[in-house]
Length: 420
Image (tube, rainbow, N blue to C red; front, side, top):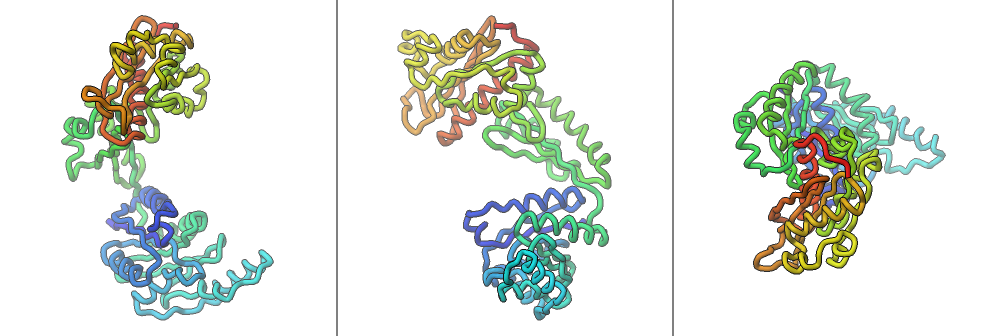
């Protein structure tokens, strides 16, 4: 099976000024064509480094896609690096030059002399037309590797890949079959605990592949299947997904790009229930996430940011004696905040957050990262406690997810919530 390497050239990326989105896009398109990507390489505008990277890539990959370094300036070095690697001369291509010149004429601009360099190609290479800009691409072979160099401008790269590169890959038989990915999202357990339940699926060599990634305390399981057709790949994925769902149960809340707030709003909509939020630690983050979901206004009535204890008392009816005895960071206050919010805003459910995000504010019994989330419904309240490790922003974000998940689990367990 042909493996591909994607190389992005440009100091703007290695310096952190620009995000390399080309590599992500190309990896997705290659997967759709059944070509796995083994390596991503990002290079600054340095001739010797480019030559070395192109040499390494052409030795280990059957397909090398290069983006960037085809402009007219002195730091655009891709064509020169390819020529130096192969020992070929740079040959002037009149047809490409005429197209570049005409492009400037149509724009009623004078073509700088430096743009002539964009019509130079390593001997034996094939120019790839670029109707969207002044930088033609380069198609050539180095050893057993097929090389396609494309502009770094995303719109030009996308057009050239679709119009010029992909048809050539198909003609060579490199693009055959598909790679289909399925992502399953979970919350409520750590990475090691989840993997322990799925060790037979995540072992090396399992077909289809199952990998685990973690972000913001969300565990994502990625199933990757390779097959001649999409239908066959889906047939590989389906039983594995079902096994994952059976073993993880309510830890699974969604697929692909679904977030916890999407799952919660879906349940609220199905049950025709309303919700409100009372936030201390998260400062409105829970409400903001709920409001990201289209149509949230039908189910989300509003929220109270009660950062100060006075606001907890005056707007959420948290008893002063409770705050004095238990402290604002406590299960009792979390439940009282949710109860008061639900009653004040007249909603079916209310969720609350309180805790210590740090870096200050900790005590010997209440460390940074200690959080409580509360839930109130018609007939009861409950709360959860957790100790997060991380930055202030991470603690806040993970606690917001924790609150959303508490409401989600309540609705999945009960199937309904009595009206306020």
